[in-house]
Amino acid sequence: MVIRSVVQGWGAYLPEKILTNDDLAKIVETSDEWIVERTGIRQRHIAADGEMTSDLATHATVQALARAGIDGAEIDIIVLGTATPDETFPATATRVQERIGAHTAFAFDVQAACSGFIYALALADNFLRLGQARTALVIGAETFSRILDWQDRTTCVLFGDGAGAVVLRAEEGTGANTDRGVLSTHLHSDGRQHDLLYADGGPSFNQMAGVVRMQGREVFRQAVIKLSAVVGEALVSNGFSVADVDWLVPHQANKRILDSTARKSGISLKKMVVTVDRHANTSAASIPLALSEAANDDRIKQGDLVVMEAMGAGFTWAAATLRW
Ligand code: ACO
Image (cartoon, rainbow, N blue to C red):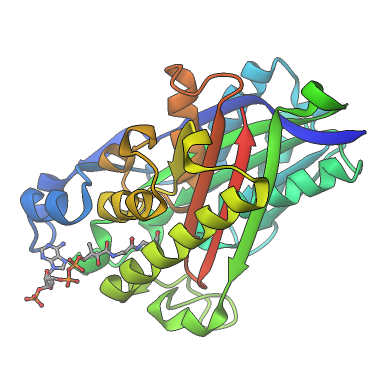
């Protein structure tokens, strides 16, 4: 008997306010041309004053629950990936828990920066496969606009706000019954590369959240190396070849990172889901946002093999394979 975590529902939310590259050019010395050429980003969504990470996460969750056809009370575990929680504590996941009435669930946040969604998915999948929970809510949600230095053109043009969520249900079976669901997750981190990407604040530091500091060129180089390696690891460990992949759903950092990683992995760019042009980098939210978009417009169909990959500060990097 095998237990698999099968996707039952998905949802996404982007704040109403859109900030275009031309809008940014009024704040810092940059241009639409530079940003599009170097990153592929054309616009990003920005949370309204007072709109919190938990608000974005709850909107995405309500959609995911509706699509799964279940009530919040049926959720056993909530794992929320974020680097921009509402508060230092408690976990933003518990705010969502309260809003959806998941009163018998246990809820916690995962901090793995841009890899947060895959880390959260891996944790939920393990709880489900161990039989410690039957229905999981996995969320990636961020308000990165709150930790940007809006005077630093090398970082403020890259990020946006948003949230995405999936509902996973443990399904038991043998043979064809267990074809669907999360097939594998592959998590890595390397704390030696801290200084290449971090936020220069935090509770144990100076009580303020800090702002993003990044050595962009080296982050770019490391991203392509690590992401193509972890995609290879995910395929090899399942005995898949690139031809088996129906959809690559990468963390949306920079179109050039996405393209280079797909090319290095040997995966056709036509199989890649791209949202970075409209969402920018929404950190832990970018993969569930992209998944939701591609599932809503029927690109991703039941039975498709989906490979997800992400890299973020730490460094952390990760991949997951999933039969939709
Ligand atoms: N507008 C105009 N000019 C700019 C801007 C801007 N927004 N930002 C930097 N420049 C200038 C620099 O000052 C520099 O000028 P100089 O040559 O006079 O010194 C020039 O453009 C080139 O700068 P580079 O940093 O070398 O440009 P690069 O081609 O590396 O692009 C970028 C920068 C887009 C940040 C790229 O390195 C990148 O995307 N790195 C990855 C960063 C990332 O994705 N981080 C997200 C978190 S990690 C993850 O999600 C994978």
